[in-house]
Length: 393
Image 1 (cartoon, rainbow, N blue to C red):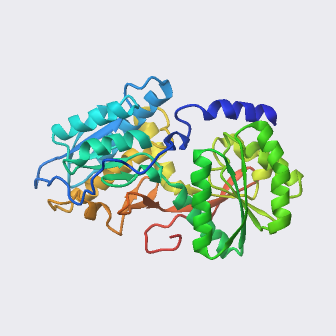
Image 2 (cartoon, rainbow, N blue to C red):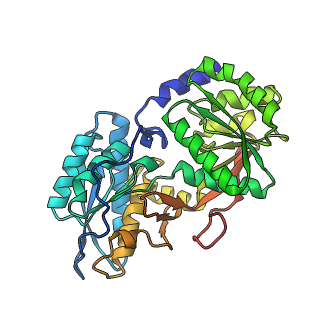
Image 3 (tube, helix red, strand yellow):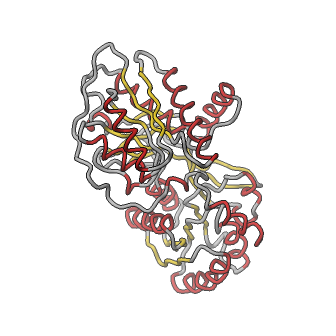
């Protein structure tokens, strides 16, 4: 048990691990104008699109991610029908200064929209550099604090995940939630997303327990969780822990302490099927978590692997989605197809992970499935919605 957590602590520090890489300490984007328009498109001409990816980064994993993002974007461009994009790739070295420089160069080269860059801080830098020319940015970040002005985020946010899971839980009769979160930036943002989702669903948060990100702190927090359960009598524990962090410990220690199914339902803000070894943990059996449309993701992985000889990074599909959204808008033939109003159309877009749409504040909604783990395998309890007029939103 302890060896697993020691390894997880080592992994959590890597720049790119699942979606944790995109969560950075952030504040409201500074210097970004409230861009309401965008450079007009020329009818019948290819749409100049800039792709900002972390080519030139020092970390080998980030370099591989940059290649996967570019490959996915090129796949999307080749799939477009009725419209062509002139895809131009710019390296950011995964730094804000290089991201800003890349955005300035892209705008000078005639880009009508920017897809990327990767992280919250590079997204803000690129957005600031492009704002003066009215160029919108579709960043790969999942941090809502990077969104705003001319920056729209493509990544699956904690808010979307918490809302989907909470609404499902309430429909299943769960009404009293205890929030268990780490005392770090991701934990703080996750806790806020869960609390907001629970309150809006009509349920109640009856307790909150936080823990420092260390093995000993997690062990010591179990007594505080027991006290909170005794005081608030929750029927659900909604935790931010993932398989690279505290989840292996909690999934063992909470049931051992008498705080588990069937009386208390576990819900995870992160995916509990990554890596596959997580499915073997006894404590996650029966837990609920959200994931993108599994069938669409499987088709994308298969196509990508067939084309490039290796499976894509988990977030590579965001690059495909960004290009697909640009293509769908450009196909409408309007000169203002890439404006804020167009990007935030209520119908949204169809991506390789499911339906998604942007909000005027730069955040997004994504169609997610609700899943559980039974006999060490993922079972979908509620399929991902196929449009924004269905259930799940």
